Length: 303
Image (cartoon, rainbow, N blue to C red; front, side):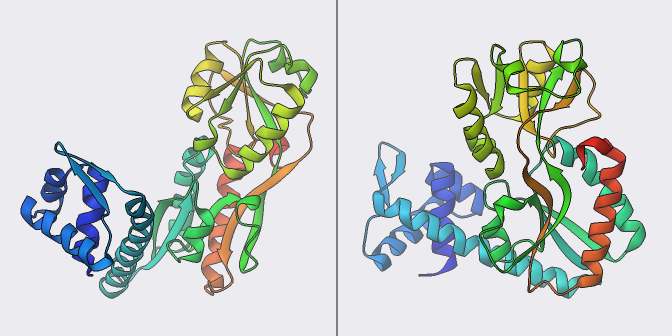
C-alpha cells in the first residue's frame, strides 16, 4: 500500500469517477484503476462497486475511505508545513475558523492589527466548523476561534474567552421586537422562527437550539441552510432568527439583534493545545482579536 494508491482511491470517490480522478491527478484512467485494484488486493476486500460507468463504496469502502482520508490529509498538512518552514522566514500560524458572519467582519481587522504587531507572522485560515477538536489534536491548526463547548471535553486544550455567550434574536428593523431591550420566549411563541440546520451549525448552537425547541415546540420553526439564508428571510420580514451573539453581524443593515431572556451559553474565544508553546504569539493573537471585536461588537453583546 502506498500514498499514490490512497490518493487515487480518494479522488475517485470524491468525484464518483475514475475518469475525473485521472484528470485531477494527471494520470491515465488505466493507472487510476490499477492503483485502486492493487489497493483492494492489498487490503483483501472490495472497496468500490463498479457498474455501468458509475462507482459507489462498499461497506468496507466507506469505513476505509474515512481512514484513508485522514492519513492523506495528515501527510499533505505535514508536507506543506515542513516546506513552509524550510522556504519561508516567516512564522506560520494556522487559525481554525467557522466562517460565521461575525468572523467575516472581525478577521480582516484582526489580520491588519496582527500584521502591525508582528510582520513575520504568516496566517493561514482553516475551516473547522464540525471538527475543531480533531483539527487541534492532529495539529492541523495552531489555534481555533470557537465556542468553548466545542473543545471542553479535551483536557489538553486551553481556552481564553473573548465574548460571553447568549442568544440573540435577528429582527427586521421595522418589527415590534426590534424596539425591545430584551426579548422573551413568550414574545416569540406565535412568530415564525428561523434556526440553522444542524449540519451547518456550531456544536454549541445545535445543543441550545434543541433546548429552545423543547421550550417552544416546532410548529413555527423553519430550519435554513446557512446564516445568509436566515439573514434574507429576516430582512424580508418573514420571521425572526435565533442565533448565538458571537455569530451575529451587528453592522448589517436591515436587521437588529436583540438579546433573548434565556440562560447564558458557552463563551466564544481562542482554543489551543498545551503543547503550543509560543506564548508571545498567543498574546499577540489575543490582543489583536480583542481589539478587532471591540470595533465590531456592541459593548452590551460582549459581556
